[in-house]
Amino acid sequence: MPIAPLSLVSPPLFAAADIREIDRLWASSHPDSPLMERAGAAAADLAGTLASESGEPILILAGPGNNGGDALVAARHLLAQGARVAVVSRADPARLPPDAARAWTAWRESGGTILADLPASRRFSLVIDGLFGVGLKRDVIGEDARWIGQANDLPCPRLALDVPSGLDSDSGQVRGCALRADHTLTFLGLKPGLLTADGPDYAGEVHLDTLGIDPATLPATPGFALTKLERRHRPPTRARNSHKGLYGHVGIIGGDTGMVGASLIAGRAALQAGAGSVTLGVLDPRIAVDFVEPRLMFSMPGHLASTRLSVLAVGPGLGQSTQAHALLEAALEAPCPLVLDADALTLLAGDPALARKAARRSAPSLLTPHPGEAARLLGTSVAVIQATRIETARTLSRTYRAEVALKGAGTVIARPDGRYAINTTGGPWLAQAGSGDRLTGMVAALLGQGMAATEALEAAVWLHGHHAQHLAFGSPASQAGRD
Image (cartoon, rainbow, N blue to C red; front, side):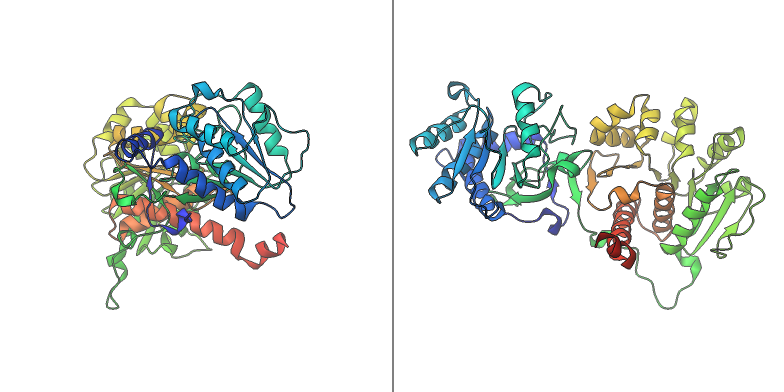
């Protein structure tokens, strides 16, 4: 029975290699109960609920691997249920994997036919995409690309099996072209590529079917989906008999001329997220008060860098001047947790000695780069970063011995020990100036209240995205705009 993955708490993420190993182990211990039969039956059941009531046939695209076998099993079940089915495949049955070959034979023995190309009629009640699954590591070209393009243009729902064809299940990168699914039925466990990079735009609504396998028996993996906040993500409980000094003194250094707003946004976010007090060290000497949020305090940035703080954040509107460099170098000596963002990351990228100093810190460090900043830190291109988001975040975390949040669609949060999470909240509403500054303030506030670095970063990222969704879809103004 398919379930909604976002209803689960921290479900594990499985790479293609993990899935292949699970398949291998199952086949060796259950030779008479192939998972393909279960996957195809589950796909047929879901297809029956998704197909329009037009009475038109269901179009099934079956590829040359096990994903195509899943599609053929689904076709056989749908045909037995009385549905009209049109199966399109160019696969050579003599070269199919064993389970897929058996599915092919069973489909033909049930009276099913195979079309070599999409029918001329463009009226279907549903498209089932079984062209390519988790094993795809090349660009989709030629006839396969043409079929995907035609399927994307059809005026009916599209259901992808396991992952949309053309989407890399490990990275979320589109391989040449990809099916834009309205629904994706993924098997055994969630795939990271469904949640990050291009995945959310192509997967549609994701359904998970474990095919009857107890999730507790599946192998441990280093990644999980950050779907909900757990108990560990909560700041320590506040006693009624308490005062501001118990909830952290947050310092934020940045705000050079013309960029003071970044520091103000970060400071306001820190107060809103519960920091006991917040002091800004802005480089623009003309700024001494925030009339919108007068609770913010101000200090000379050089003095703030050496002040005893609960947590220090450096970067929002910092600039890249000689003064900014000196302030960052001083901040790296701070004995408290340090959050580095924006221009602080660019300065690190431009000074290997400064980067080495950052990596040697004994107190916790947290980095929150966007893809451009990550590219500068690693000396590569944004395209490479986006194609390897998970490995990029893990590499940065290992290199700087820091917790890292690689921002973007499906923010990847990595720990120095190699574990990682992909956040599931947020969306394009965060694609505007100031979003990263707000996140910096939220992270700093949670650290200041006594949360551990990993939990503070995960909680801040999740809450940041959750709040953005609420503003986008929960306010009267946004509702009016959708009517």
